[in-house]
Amino acid sequence: MKPLLLALIAGPALAVTSLHATAQDDMARGRKIATEVCAACHGADGNSPTAVNPNIAGQHADYITRQLEHFKSGVRANAIMQGMAAPLSADDMRAVGVYYSRQKPKGLAAKDIDLVKAGQSLWRGGDAASGVPACSACHSPTGAGIPKNYPRVAGQYPEYTLAQLKAFRSGERGMDKDGKDVNGRIMHGVAKAMTDFQMKAVAEYAAGLR
Image (cartoon, rainbow, N blue to C red; front, side):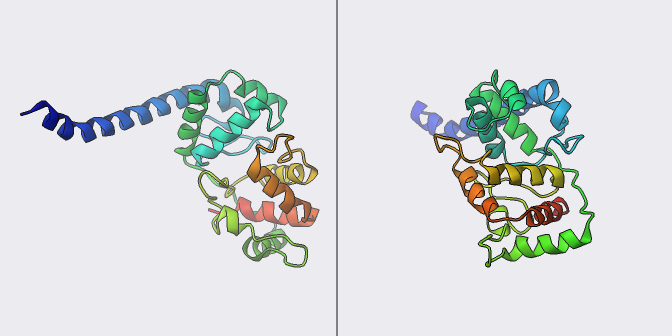
């Protein structure tokens, strides 16, 4: 068989093998970093043991990677996470994203029925009177989010979600001076229009989504 024909036949198979090897490498690298660096706060499987730190099991790989990049560069300010992200290479951050995206979220249950009802209304239809858009438009009806753009928030600790909404409203998140956190700026605009009660309601409702 001629060399050119052999190359044409073998090419796709080699490409698939290479992609498979890359995925395996990312998982192995990501697992090692998660176990040695991330597990204390986020759990080895991405299900955080405490509401102070977010659940990241099942989170979109690209979103996790972008947040690590933002922590490392200072776009997103958090002393602990900046220290954790500082030694990570671009490949490390990608691998961590891939690893945690493939872990299974344990999920949570909403507890306050009144907050859940109010949160459901905001999630599905927003509040036209105050200019709050429906959360489902960006984070999907199930809270799964949209890969590369908006994070999964289903099953997140309501305390963490509430803290982040307040951070967006104050400009602590999303208002970096270089404007690199584009989606953060969108959330800043949304959160500015929300009351504390609305934030609590949305956070409680999202916690029970699957």
